[in-house]
Structure formats: structure tokens, C-alpha cells
Length: 124
Image 1 (cartoon, one colour):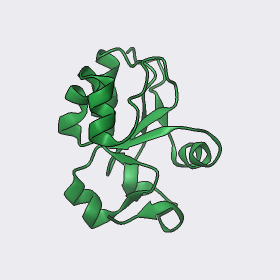
Image 2 (image 1 turned 120 degrees about the vertical axis):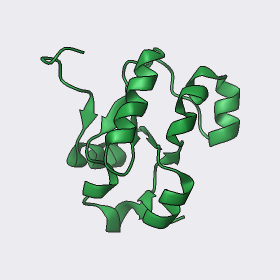
Image 3 (image 1 turned 90 degrees about the vertical axis):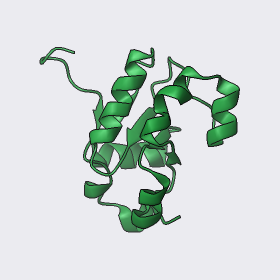
């Protein structure tokens, strides 16, 4: 990616609106322990960062069996990674880009700056 290209990131307001108006898949790449302690955006599916590459390299059936949702199609434009601060989710996005999922996006700033915690959070 050149310095002139816009990074495929989604800000707070954009993600909030997408969750309300569009069918998207949101994957939280924090560990289950972190999510239990901190909470998460209710619509997010837990997919720990260390499992991202294997999950997207594996079969669609195994993905659904493990995570309870369909694996995004490589052409899907509505799937986003999130985490605590946006760093791990950015890395997860880069990993799946390398595997052919070029439309994956990163939730910029992650849980730390998510202003809708009261309205959209879920403690495990």
C-alpha cells in the first residue's frame, strides 16, 4: 500500500451507522479473557488474533463450526476487524488481505475509543 492510498479503516460513527443500517460481520480479535474483562460490541464475533490466519485458510465449514457464523467471502465488502486499540485488528486485516480478502477493514481506535459502550456493549 502506498502512502497516498487510503487505509481501509472505519471510524466510530461509520461503524455505529453500519451496525444499525447494514448487514456487516464484525470480528473482535482480542482474547476471550480480555473480552470477558472489558466487554465488547454486542454484534462482534470473537476471533482471537492468533487464530485469524488459520481460520481464513481453513474451510468454510470449519469456520462456521468454530465461530458460529459464515466465513466472509473474499469479495464481501462488509466485514471489519476490531480489538482494544486498533493495532491487532489492523494486523488481522493485513493478514486476510494477504490471503485474498482485499475488502476487509479495520475499526480505527478499537474498543478504547468506542463512544457507544453503554448502548452497544456486551459483557461475557
